[in-house]
Structure formats: structure tokens, C-alpha cells
Image 1 (cartoon, rainbow, N blue to C red):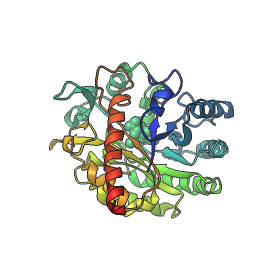
Image 2 (tube, rainbow, N blue to C red):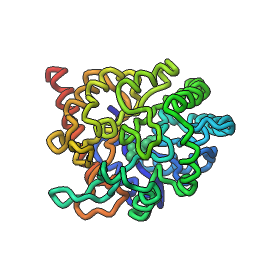
Image 3 (tube, protein in one colour):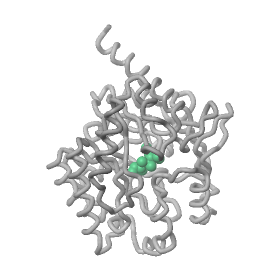
Image 4 (cartoon, rainbow, N blue to C red):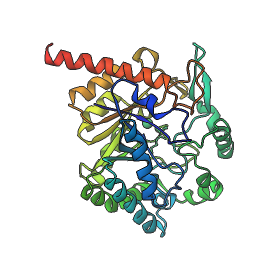
Length: 356
Ligand SMILES: O=C(O)[C@@H](O)[C@@H](O)[C@H](O)[C@H](O)CO
Ligand SMILES: [Fe+2]
């Protein structure tokens, strides 16, 4: 596996690049131009700037997360072709810079959803938490306030310009069924995948987080059956998956190792993290260790290993520990510990198979 680590950019992340380079086995950054609104073409000079910064620290920029999909594409509005054209230009520019994988998602309005970014765990650390009952009675605007007031950085997936139009977006999605969303995804893929292929960039859709509908908005990438349908929309290796163990794992019915084995050849990017789930539908993010959560991370890594997985991996989120001040979920320390746990499992599996 090729270990990489998410970095939000100079002035937009509390962690200096050189610290990422000091984590054993980290070879690149997962990045994006977070200040470019969804739907706009990424400027070449800004792409080159990040490339130079990363490479000066010995890190590559082969994986981008995310090139966000404009809502008009998800809504299937008549303006979608304009935004898809822009998306395509961005793909071409990223290929030019040496990018190999683009992660994106197709969730209406909200990206990941949590009710508390700093829920306390037994050991005094804090982590992202989803309280099922709370969300059911919550006004979406209140959720936006909770997420944005908690962080001094703009949260990815919660960009102000998109959220300003919240009520109008909700209005427009009233008409959109799950089947419509599938159709709009297919339309997008049919235009984008051939370009990605011609530019040797693999596309990897991120599953919905959590993998069920929130605020009545349709969500379609939630389990094995959805992924099966997804890969057939455009049956080409370039139409692939960012397999997120924490997103899918929030639903105890998803057997993540099994899903990995089934789709291994279409997984271009792995997000590995653990969550502890509760019977009432709540879940909290935990350390990577299998014992600490409900997802069997040992079996997750084993499934990748057995499948001969040789693509990119990142520790997804981490807890906030040791007094670190950081982006919610994206501290240095717990993700660094997570990486070492993943390497520990991977290296021993390697040795065992080689019989060393
Ligand atoms: O929760 C996170 O931070 C990520 O896993 C997602 O925001 C992810 O970057 C997007 O869904 C990908 O488009
Ligand atoms: Fe993820």
C-alpha cells in the first residue's frame, strides 16, 4: 500500500508539511484547492504551487480529495454541462501536474455529517460524533452553525458559498428521487470517465457518510449493492471507488472486509478508520485499533493484503489527543498512530506470506 496523508494547504492546516514527511512510510499528500468553489476550474498556477511545496518536502501530490461536484450536476439542471466542462478541464490540468487519482462524492448538499466535533471519549480525548436522535429533530441551519463555529478553518464539504443557499437547495432537492440521483450520476460519469481514462486519472467515489439519508435528502452510495450498481454505470476500471471503512462501517450491516474483497480491483484509494457504533444509530470515531471500535481494522487491512492491493491508503480521521489544536478529525498525532497500526498489520502480513 502507498501511504499518504491529507493536508489542507499552506495557511489552511495546522500541520507543517515536513511533519507529515516524518511519519514512517508516508510518501505523499492528499490535497485540494480548498479555496476554489465547486464548479470552477482549478487555476494552473495554484496547482503548481502545491506541487512545488509538497515536492520540496519529498512528498508527491498524486491523489486529490476532492474535486467537488457542483450541485447543479447532482440536481441534473440544464446548467450541468457547463460545470461538467469545467470539471473536465480540471481533470486535464491535474493530469498535467502528475495526479493519478481523484476522489469525489455525490452526496446532495452536505458532505459528511456529525452532531458534535468534540465528543469526549473515556480517556479524555475528543472525536467526531453522530447522534441519531439529535439529527432527526435538527434544523439543517443549526447543524451548519454547529460545524462552522467549531473550527477556525473552513470545513471541507461545508464551504460557505454552498451552504449560503441552503434553503433554496433543499427546495430543489424536493423533486429529486434516488433514481433521479442515479441518473444524474450516470450522466456525469459518462462524460467524465472517458476523459479521466484518456488522461490516466482514476476516479474514486467516496461513499456517503453516514451511509443513510439525512434530512430527507437522497443518498445512493451506502452499501455493497449500491457499489455494485455504481461500478456498472460505466464499467471501466477508471470508474472506481474510494473505499472508506469508517463511512461504510457506521452501518453495522456493512461487512467492510467483505466489500473490500468484492471490489478490490476497483478501489483506487482506501480511507481507513474505525468507528464505534451503538444500537440506537449513534456512532463515534475512535482510534484505529480494532479493539477500540466496531470495525475490524485487522480484517480490513488483511482484505487489502489478500487482494494484492497496491494503491493509495490514508488514515481517515483521528481523535484529538495530547492537547493538540487542529482541524476536527485531522490532527497529526492520532492519524500518525493510526498509520503505525496499519503498517504493523501490513508488515506482519507481508512477512507471513513470504514465509520469513
Ligand atoms: O470526512 C472527511 O473528511 C472525508 O472523508 C470526506 O469529506 C471526503 O473528503 C469527501 O466526502 C470526498 O469527496
Ligand atoms: Fe473517508
